[in-house]
Image (cartoon, rainbow, N blue to C red; front, side, top):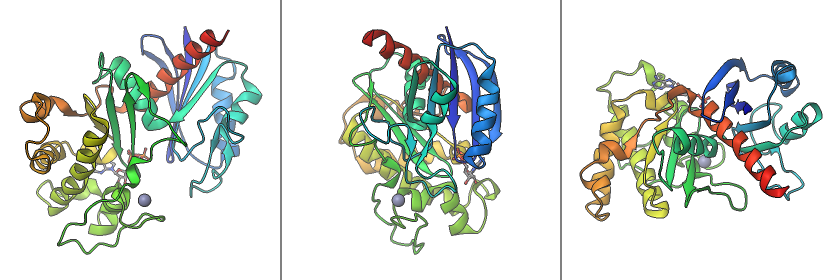
Length: 296
Ligand code: ADP
Ligand code: ZN
């Protein structure tokens, strides 16, 4: 079985063909430009290829509710040209196969629980800390949706007492994303994350905000694994700082060995690495086939 996988990111689109074992057989990356240009390239890439379904994991916010009038749209993004853009409608004009549409992070959470760090578990959380911050959750074996989809990157965080930075979220200023995303690091310190030394105070502050958020997610969702990806998490020295801070905040409240003794295996990078996004889209495509078969 072959799946067309599309990881629609704000900076780049990754396109691939994969199979039911999670193998990516072919992949390319194209820059995210105006939808008319990018989607033309997407159609060209898949046009003469064989596949049974399409999975799209997208930057958001999106409308993933099948019953909705704006199903398949990227909705209120500030990204030029993509606001209220019907990405699934455009794909349907060209391809007559089942299509699944979800957030990039819900896809990544699904992919990691099928083939990666959360394999065999019923619940998991996937967080990306990059241009934005977002998280997707698997609970009782299913991706979480609701009114739309969770927006865990925009939660309120408790400001550090020595932190006077106003925050950069266009909607909330000092929400998690506004304080701890890659662009927030750059705005606060005047340098990009990868230019800062490992011993720079930026990292302790970064861990302070991210750990608070993860503690909240652990308390609310009770995930069996927390997987952290995205550009900023390439700074792997952040993992021990975040784990320590999580234990400090939880203060022995969650009496589970995963948190108390084995937190190195509880808060982890994605096994699928840079393929977490495209593998997520592949997992979504397989889901589209399952749903299609159970409806027919
Ligand atoms: P996107 O969010 O667009 O999918 P990324 O996850 O790569 O892309 O996130 C990009 C952000 O992460 C930028 O703000 C960039 O400065 C930051 N970033 C990328 N690589 C690193 C790194 N190695 N260390 C720290 N920050 C990084
Ligand atoms: Zn926000």
